Length: 159
Image (cartoon, rainbow, N blue to C red):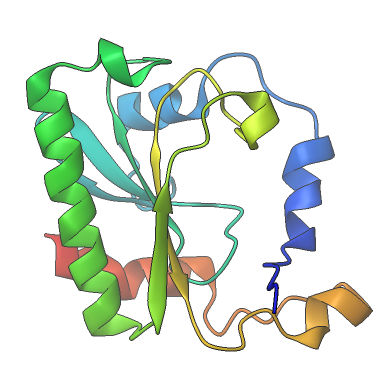
């Protein structure tokens, strides 16, 4: 049986006007980590919450440097991205108790990259039955926790 993850609320981001520049670079340069949903600053990379999540707890890990291709990352950046991804997986498993997780990169616009020129790793918690009828029939998503509330729960687990 083929399953589809439905996230119709993301259309707001997809069709919305895009600001010039890179929202990740702007986020990393800013000091208001809570407002930007930035959970953990490492030496070369950071963990952030996705503002337009596929599911609750959808996180991203990205290098501070604005890089389009994996090959452009230094060994130090690659190692830290991997280590922060492992940390994020463990935090999500402990706190949100998902039945599984999807990890991956969207490389290029055709692959679904909303931000195609700043590499980032997605970490998407999944629960059995999370592709239910609500978004399909009514365009309504069921998010059990508001973004800022979830940030306040996850932030201390990363720091």
